[in-house]
Image (cartoon, rainbow, N blue to C red; front, side, top):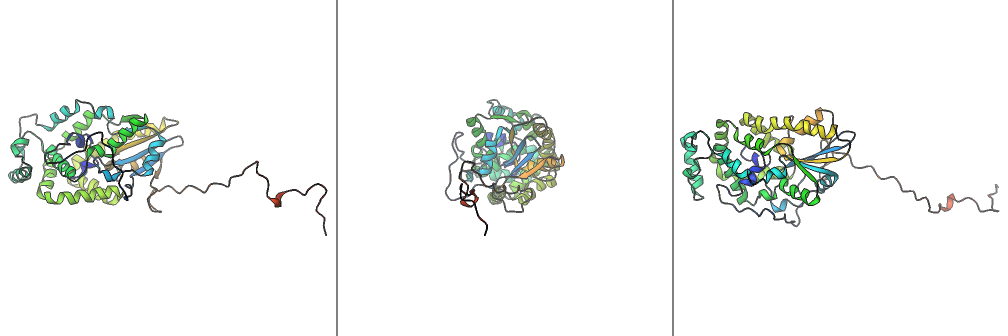
Length: 355
Protein backbone atom coordinates (compact mmCIF):
# COMPACT_ATOMS: atom_id res chain seq x y z
CA UNK A 1 0.00 0.00 0.00
CA UNK A 2 2.72 2.47 0.93
CA UNK A 3 4.31 2.37 -2.55
CA UNK A 4 1.17 2.14 -4.60
CA UNK A 5 1.14 5.86 -5.23
CA UNK A 6 4.28 5.58 -7.31
CA UNK A 7 2.58 3.68 -10.10
CA UNK A 8 -1.15 3.78 -9.41
CA UNK A 9 -2.41 6.95 -7.77
CA UNK A 10 -2.71 10.16 -9.79
CA UNK A 11 0.65 11.34 -11.04
CA UNK A 12 -0.08 14.93 -10.01
CA UNK A 13 0.97 13.77 -6.55
CA UNK A 14 4.48 12.95 -7.65
CA UNK A 15 4.89 16.19 -9.55
CA UNK A 16 3.65 18.57 -6.90
CA UNK A 17 5.55 16.87 -4.09
CA UNK A 18 8.97 17.08 -5.73
CA UNK A 19 10.06 19.00 -2.65
CA UNK A 20 8.72 16.74 0.08
CA UNK A 21 8.95 16.28 3.83
CA UNK A 22 12.25 14.41 3.57
CA UNK A 23 15.33 15.70 1.82
CA UNK A 24 15.63 14.89 -1.87
CA UNK A 25 16.89 16.41 -5.09
CA UNK A 26 14.60 16.36 -8.12
CA UNK A 27 15.74 16.69 -11.70
CA UNK A 28 14.77 19.77 -13.64
CA UNK A 29 11.45 19.47 -15.42
CA UNK A 30 12.91 19.70 -18.90
CA UNK A 31 15.81 17.35 -18.31
CA UNK A 32 16.10 14.47 -20.72
CA UNK A 33 16.41 10.85 -19.70
CA UNK A 34 20.00 9.72 -20.17
CA UNK A 35 20.65 6.59 -22.16
CA UNK A 36 22.48 4.11 -19.91
CA UNK A 37 25.04 1.66 -21.16
CA UNK A 38 24.53 -2.09 -20.97
CA UNK A 39 21.11 -2.19 -19.29
CA UNK A 40 18.10 -3.62 -21.07
CA UNK A 41 14.98 -1.46 -21.32
CA UNK A 42 12.13 -2.23 -18.90
CA UNK A 43 9.77 -4.96 -20.09
CA UNK A 44 6.58 -3.06 -20.93
CA UNK A 45 3.18 -3.61 -19.38
CA UNK A 46 1.56 -3.14 -22.77
CA UNK A 47 -1.57 -4.67 -24.30
CA UNK A 48 -3.26 -4.13 -27.64
CA UNK A 49 -7.05 -4.15 -27.49
CA UNK A 50 -8.73 -4.20 -30.89
CA UNK A 51 -11.89 -4.75 -32.86
CA UNK A 52 -12.28 -5.03 -36.62
CA UNK A 53 -11.41 -1.39 -37.30
CA UNK A 54 -8.79 -0.05 -34.92
CA UNK A 55 -6.91 -0.57 -31.66
CA UNK A 56 -6.29 0.89 -28.22
CA UNK A 57 -2.87 0.26 -26.63
CA UNK A 58 -2.94 0.08 -22.82
CA UNK A 59 0.37 0.94 -21.15
CA UNK A 60 0.99 0.56 -17.40
CA UNK A 61 2.98 3.45 -15.96
CA UNK A 62 5.27 4.05 -13.00
CA UNK A 63 5.02 7.71 -12.07
CA UNK A 64 8.62 8.13 -10.88
CA UNK A 65 11.57 6.58 -12.69
CA UNK A 66 15.36 6.79 -12.89
CA UNK A 67 17.54 7.76 -15.83
CA UNK A 68 18.57 4.13 -16.33
CA UNK A 69 14.94 3.16 -16.93
CA UNK A 70 15.46 4.67 -20.38
CA UNK A 71 15.51 4.12 -23.28
CA UNK A 72 12.09 2.50 -23.42
CA UNK A 73 11.29 -0.78 -25.10
CA UNK A 74 10.90 -0.60 -28.85
CA UNK A 75 7.43 -2.07 -28.26
CA UNK A 76 6.39 1.22 -26.65
CA UNK A 77 8.07 3.24 -29.38
CA UNK A 78 6.15 1.31 -32.03
CA UNK A 79 2.81 1.61 -30.21
CA UNK A 80 3.42 5.34 -29.78
CA UNK A 81 4.30 5.70 -33.46
CA UNK A 82 1.22 3.76 -34.56
CA UNK A 83 -1.15 5.87 -32.45
CA UNK A 84 -2.80 9.03 -33.69
CA UNK A 85 -3.41 10.28 -30.16
CA UNK A 86 -2.28 9.63 -26.60
CA UNK A 87 -4.53 9.64 -23.53
CA UNK A 88 -3.35 9.97 -19.93
CA UNK A 89 -5.22 9.92 -16.64
CA UNK A 90 -5.33 13.72 -16.86
CA UNK A 91 -4.56 15.79 -19.93
CA UNK A 92 -1.19 17.60 -20.08
CA UNK A 93 -3.06 20.90 -20.23
CA UNK A 94 -4.78 20.26 -16.89
CA UNK A 95 -1.76 18.57 -15.40
CA UNK A 96 0.40 21.66 -15.75
CA UNK A 97 -2.25 24.28 -15.07
CA UNK A 98 -0.55 26.80 -12.74
CA UNK A 99 -3.52 26.75 -10.36
CA UNK A 100 -3.24 23.02 -9.64
CA UNK A 101 -0.71 23.39 -6.84
CA UNK A 102 -2.96 25.68 -4.85
CA UNK A 103 -5.99 23.43 -5.37
CA UNK A 104 -3.94 20.41 -4.35
CA UNK A 105 -2.74 21.99 -1.11
CA UNK A 106 -6.24 23.10 -0.22
CA UNK A 107 -7.35 19.48 -0.24
CA UNK A 108 -4.30 18.37 1.76
CA UNK A 109 -5.32 20.53 4.72
CA UNK A 110 -8.18 20.19 7.18
CA UNK A 111 -11.27 22.21 6.44
CA UNK A 112 -12.90 21.67 9.85
CA UNK A 113 -10.27 23.00 12.22
CA UNK A 114 -8.78 19.63 13.18
CA UNK A 115 -5.05 18.99 13.24
CA UNK A 116 -2.81 16.04 12.53
CA UNK A 117 -1.88 15.85 16.21
CA UNK A 118 -5.52 15.44 17.12
CA UNK A 119 -6.29 12.61 14.71
CA UNK A 120 -3.12 10.52 15.16
CA UNK A 121 -2.71 8.11 18.08
CA UNK A 122 0.00 9.08 20.57
CA UNK A 123 2.45 6.36 19.49
CA UNK A 124 2.14 7.39 15.86
CA UNK A 125 2.74 11.04 16.69
CA UNK A 126 5.97 10.05 18.43
CA UNK A 127 7.15 7.94 15.50
CA UNK A 128 6.35 10.69 13.01
CA UNK A 129 8.23 13.23 15.10
CA UNK A 130 11.31 10.98 15.09
CA UNK A 131 11.24 10.59 11.31
CA UNK A 132 10.72 14.29 10.72
CA UNK A 133 13.49 15.22 13.17
CA UNK A 134 16.05 13.38 11.04
CA UNK A 135 15.36 15.98 8.34
CA UNK A 136 15.18 19.01 10.59
CA UNK A 137 11.38 19.03 10.72
CA UNK A 138 8.82 18.66 13.48
CA UNK A 139 5.20 17.65 13.83
CA UNK A 140 4.16 21.24 14.42
CA UNK A 141 5.30 22.10 10.90
CA UNK A 142 2.92 19.59 9.30
CA UNK A 143 0.09 19.77 11.82
CA UNK A 144 -2.37 21.28 9.33
CA UNK A 145 -1.92 18.40 6.87
CA UNK A 146 -4.00 15.24 6.54
CA UNK A 147 -2.42 11.78 7.03
CA UNK A 148 -2.66 10.74 3.36
CA UNK A 149 -0.61 13.77 2.32
CA UNK A 150 2.03 13.23 5.00
CA UNK A 151 2.36 9.56 4.09
CA UNK A 152 2.66 10.34 0.42
CA UNK A 153 5.25 13.04 1.07
CA UNK A 154 7.40 10.67 3.13
CA UNK A 155 7.30 7.96 0.47
CA UNK A 156 8.19 10.41 -2.27
CA UNK A 157 11.02 11.86 -0.20
CA UNK A 158 12.59 8.42 0.16
CA UNK A 159 12.09 7.63 -3.53
CA UNK A 160 13.73 10.84 -4.67
CA UNK A 161 16.70 10.32 -2.35
CA UNK A 162 17.14 6.99 -4.18
CA UNK A 163 17.31 8.72 -7.57
CA UNK A 164 13.68 8.48 -8.68
CA UNK A 165 12.21 11.57 -10.32
CA UNK A 166 8.64 12.52 -11.27
CA UNK A 167 9.99 14.35 -14.31
CA UNK A 168 11.30 11.00 -15.55
CA UNK A 169 8.04 9.20 -14.85
CA UNK A 170 6.63 7.39 -17.86
CA UNK A 171 3.63 9.71 -18.08
CA UNK A 172 5.61 12.93 -18.20
CA UNK A 173 8.13 11.45 -20.61
CA UNK A 174 5.40 10.44 -23.06
CA UNK A 175 3.64 13.79 -22.63
CA UNK A 176 6.80 15.48 -23.86
CA UNK A 177 7.13 12.97 -26.69
CA UNK A 178 3.54 13.57 -27.77
CA UNK A 179 4.06 17.33 -27.78
CA UNK A 180 7.22 17.03 -29.88
CA UNK A 181 5.52 14.67 -32.33
CA UNK A 182 2.47 16.91 -32.64
CA UNK A 183 0.12 14.16 -31.46
CA UNK A 184 -3.23 14.94 -29.87
CA UNK A 185 -3.01 14.37 -26.11
CA UNK A 186 -5.97 14.19 -23.74
CA UNK A 187 -7.16 12.83 -20.40
CA UNK A 188 -9.62 10.26 -19.09
CA UNK A 189 -10.73 12.39 -16.14
CA UNK A 190 -10.47 15.92 -14.79
CA UNK A 191 -7.80 17.15 -12.43
CA UNK A 192 -10.41 18.13 -9.85
CA UNK A 193 -11.73 14.58 -9.85
CA UNK A 194 -8.22 13.22 -9.20
CA UNK A 195 -7.73 15.65 -6.36
CA UNK A 196 -11.08 14.65 -4.86
CA UNK A 197 -10.13 10.97 -5.02
CA UNK A 198 -6.90 11.58 -3.13
CA UNK A 199 -8.68 13.59 -0.46
CA UNK A 200 -11.62 11.23 0.08
CA UNK A 201 -10.03 8.19 1.71
CA UNK A 202 -11.52 7.23 5.08
CA UNK A 203 -9.48 8.58 7.98
CA UNK A 204 -8.87 5.12 9.57
CA UNK A 205 -7.41 3.88 6.29
CA UNK A 206 -5.25 7.00 5.93
CA UNK A 207 -3.83 6.44 9.40
CA UNK A 208 -3.28 2.75 8.71
CA UNK A 209 -1.25 3.52 5.59
CA UNK A 210 0.85 6.09 7.46
CA UNK A 211 1.50 3.58 10.23
CA UNK A 212 2.84 1.07 7.68
CA UNK A 213 5.54 3.57 6.77
CA UNK A 214 6.36 4.76 10.28
CA UNK A 215 6.52 1.29 11.86
CA UNK A 216 9.50 0.28 9.70
CA UNK A 217 10.94 3.32 7.90
CA UNK A 218 14.34 1.66 7.40
CA UNK A 219 12.74 -1.07 5.30
CA UNK A 220 11.16 1.37 2.87
CA UNK A 221 14.08 1.69 0.40
CA UNK A 222 14.38 -2.08 -0.04
CA UNK A 223 10.65 -2.48 -0.52
CA UNK A 224 10.63 0.34 -3.04
CA UNK A 225 13.43 -1.35 -4.97
CA UNK A 226 11.43 -4.60 -5.00
CA UNK A 227 8.28 -3.06 -6.42
CA UNK A 228 10.22 -1.02 -8.98
CA UNK A 229 11.99 -4.21 -10.08
CA UNK A 230 8.62 -5.96 -10.41
CA UNK A 231 7.40 -3.15 -12.66
CA UNK A 232 10.65 -3.08 -14.63
CA UNK A 233 10.53 -6.82 -15.30
CA UNK A 234 6.75 -6.82 -15.84
CA UNK A 235 6.29 -9.39 -13.07
CA UNK A 236 2.50 -9.32 -13.03
CA UNK A 237 2.04 -11.74 -10.14
CA UNK A 238 4.45 -9.77 -7.92
CA UNK A 239 2.83 -6.45 -8.76
CA UNK A 240 -0.63 -7.86 -8.20
CA UNK A 241 0.38 -9.33 -4.84
CA UNK A 242 2.21 -6.29 -3.47
CA UNK A 243 -0.04 -3.63 -4.89
CA UNK A 244 -3.56 -4.46 -5.92
CA UNK A 245 -4.37 -7.32 -3.53
CA UNK A 246 -2.57 -5.73 -0.60
CA UNK A 247 -4.46 -2.50 -1.07
CA UNK A 248 -7.76 -4.26 -1.57
CA UNK A 249 -7.30 -6.33 1.61
CA UNK A 250 -5.91 -3.63 3.89
CA UNK A 251 -7.78 -0.52 2.72
CA UNK A 252 -10.81 -1.71 0.76
CA UNK A 253 -12.64 1.62 0.66
CA UNK A 254 -9.59 3.44 -0.66
CA UNK A 255 -9.14 0.67 -3.22
CA UNK A 256 -12.72 1.08 -4.37
CA UNK A 257 -12.31 4.82 -4.92
CA UNK A 258 -8.79 4.76 -6.37
CA UNK A 259 -9.12 1.73 -8.61
CA UNK A 260 -12.55 0.16 -9.10
CA UNK A 261 -14.64 3.29 -9.57
CA UNK A 262 -12.12 4.97 -11.83
CA UNK A 263 -11.77 1.87 -14.00
CA UNK A 264 -15.55 1.79 -14.35
CA UNK A 265 -15.58 5.44 -15.40
CA UNK A 266 -12.83 4.93 -17.97
CA UNK A 267 -14.23 1.76 -19.51
CA UNK A 268 -16.98 3.42 -21.61
CA UNK A 269 -14.45 5.90 -22.95
CA UNK A 270 -12.13 3.12 -24.10
CA UNK A 271 -15.01 1.19 -25.65
CA UNK A 272 -16.08 4.33 -27.50
CA UNK A 273 -12.61 4.65 -29.02
CA UNK A 274 -13.03 1.17 -30.46
CA UNK A 275 -16.74 1.05 -31.28
CA UNK A 276 -17.24 4.47 -32.85
CA UNK A 277 -13.90 5.06 -34.58
CA UNK A 278 -13.39 3.35 -37.91
CA UNK A 279 -9.70 4.12 -38.10
CA UNK A 280 -6.90 5.53 -35.96
CA UNK A 281 -5.26 3.89 -32.95
CA UNK A 282 -4.85 5.37 -29.45
CA UNK A 283 -2.17 4.88 -26.80
CA UNK A 284 -3.61 5.04 -23.25
CA UNK A 285 -1.12 5.54 -20.40
CA UNK A 286 -2.41 4.88 -16.86
CA UNK A 287 -1.03 3.72 -13.54
CA UNK A 288 -0.15 0.03 -13.66
CA UNK A 289 -2.66 -0.88 -10.95
CA UNK A 290 -5.47 -0.16 -13.39
CA UNK A 291 -4.38 -2.99 -15.69
CA UNK A 292 -4.07 -5.72 -13.05
CA UNK A 293 -6.53 -8.31 -11.79
CA UNK A 294 -10.07 -9.29 -12.66
CA UNK A 295 -11.30 -5.73 -12.16
CA UNK A 296 -8.49 -4.23 -14.24
CA UNK A 297 -9.03 -2.64 -17.63
CA UNK A 298 -7.47 -5.55 -19.55
CA UNK A 299 -9.87 -8.15 -18.18
CA UNK A 300 -12.84 -5.79 -18.26
CA UNK A 301 -12.27 -5.15 -21.96
CA UNK A 302 -11.70 -8.85 -22.60
CA UNK A 303 -15.12 -9.58 -21.10
CA UNK A 304 -16.65 -7.21 -23.67
CA UNK A 305 -15.38 -9.39 -26.48
CA UNK A 306 -12.48 -7.32 -27.78
CA UNK A 307 -9.34 -9.01 -29.04
CA UNK A 308 -6.57 -8.85 -26.41
CA UNK A 309 -2.88 -9.22 -27.26
CA UNK A 310 0.16 -8.71 -25.04
CA UNK A 311 2.76 -6.60 -26.84
CA UNK A 312 6.09 -7.79 -25.47
CA UNK A 313 8.99 -8.77 -27.70
CA UNK A 314 11.06 -9.57 -24.57
CA UNK A 315 8.49 -11.99 -23.13
CA UNK A 316 9.03 -15.72 -23.28
CA UNK A 317 6.94 -17.88 -25.56
CA UNK A 318 3.83 -19.02 -23.71
CA UNK A 319 3.26 -15.73 -21.89
CA UNK A 320 -0.52 -15.21 -21.60
CA UNK A 321 -1.99 -13.08 -24.41
CA UNK A 322 1.36 -12.91 -26.18
CA UNK A 323 0.70 -12.29 -29.85
CA UNK A 324 2.15 -14.98 -32.15
CA UNK A 325 5.27 -14.01 -34.10
CA UNK A 326 4.59 -12.67 -37.58
CA UNK A 327 4.34 -15.30 -40.29
CA UNK A 328 7.35 -15.65 -42.61
CA UNK A 329 7.10 -13.38 -45.61
CA UNK A 330 6.10 -15.04 -48.87
CA UNK A 331 8.88 -15.40 -51.48
CA UNK A 332 9.19 -12.28 -53.58
CA UNK A 333 8.41 -12.79 -57.25
CA UNK A 334 10.09 -10.35 -59.61
CA UNK A 335 8.05 -10.18 -62.79
CA UNK A 336 10.78 -8.80 -65.01
CA UNK A 337 13.49 -11.27 -63.96
CA UNK A 338 14.53 -13.87 -66.53
CA UNK A 339 13.12 -17.34 -65.83
CA UNK A 340 15.54 -20.00 -64.62
CA UNK A 341 17.26 -22.06 -67.32
CA UNK A 342 15.09 -25.10 -66.64
CA UNK A 343 11.94 -23.08 -67.22
CA UNK A 344 12.95 -21.61 -70.59
CA UNK A 345 11.09 -22.97 -73.64
CA UNK A 346 13.24 -24.72 -76.25
CA UNK A 347 14.82 -22.38 -78.78
CA UNK A 348 13.18 -22.14 -82.21
CA UNK A 349 14.37 -24.99 -84.41
CA UNK A 350 15.66 -26.99 -81.48
CA UNK A 351 12.57 -28.91 -80.48
CA UNK A 352 13.11 -31.63 -77.94
CA UNK A 353 13.14 -35.06 -79.61
CA UNK A 354 12.05 -38.26 -78.01
CA UNK A 355 14.38 -41.21 -78.04
